[in-house]
Image 1: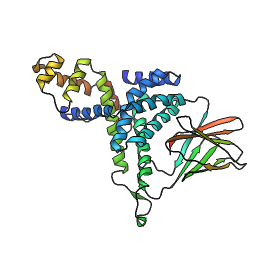
Image 2: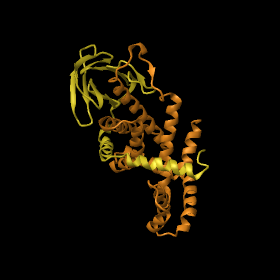
Image 3: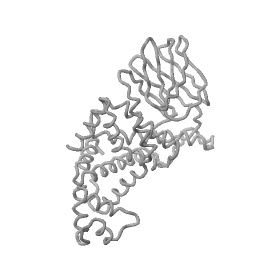
Image 4: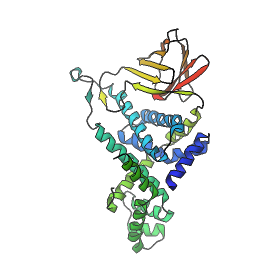
Length: 196
Length: 145
């Protein structure tokens, strides 16, 4: 699979000490790490510490990556764990009721909730990778359709130089291609393999 | 598999693209610079236990951070508590323990013959511990303290 091959070769070259291969891995997965951190509500120095720790951990583990398809899952899991630790550090500054003991669980941090969040992290990564696989014109159309506030069709038509009437059909084809991208198919393979 | 309908797919794609906007230049620079810490031929002491649980968010009295690292022949226990580092290398022997940050800051301490060491330490952020004993260097996984 093209998807896995390119990640494998980047990992392999990084193992051999190739900084540019490492930088490519960083570009590919930095939105996964930063997005995960932002979603937990961490910011500033704590967010930077978590980001740095995740990448330092990945450097340590380069030699142990056997399955490149599992890499986004590993990164998302490591980022989530470090976020939780950072939140615990933060929470010790919050006065707590001594009667409540030391094992009071925060709501929303149950194991199923965590698994669901990890799955969503991996899905977003697959969507970004899938988007990168599309031809430039289809990718550009999808990005314009995602603008917030939404752009009128005539604006999209003008920017891309395509007739208004072709936007709808192209959108359908682009999304079908995204759904069928190597990245999205790989996501199905890995999640099914893990029985999720 | 999700995404039978285009609207759900487009919505999630929107979230995925938005993650890219959470990327900062500082985050990119730190991620790239992490590669300089690639160490070959140095045994890694893996994180074995951490008082700050990674699984569930537990609220409680968490003044001391206790970390345990494990390698093939050596384990390292450390406790960081209010500006003080205490620890032990097992099996006990005289060794040099260093605390290192990604920026290159370094604090050293020599253990006694039972492997016990202590020193004042004010540090925050990612660190790793490096144990030098009998001419061999072993480094721990990075942890955020």
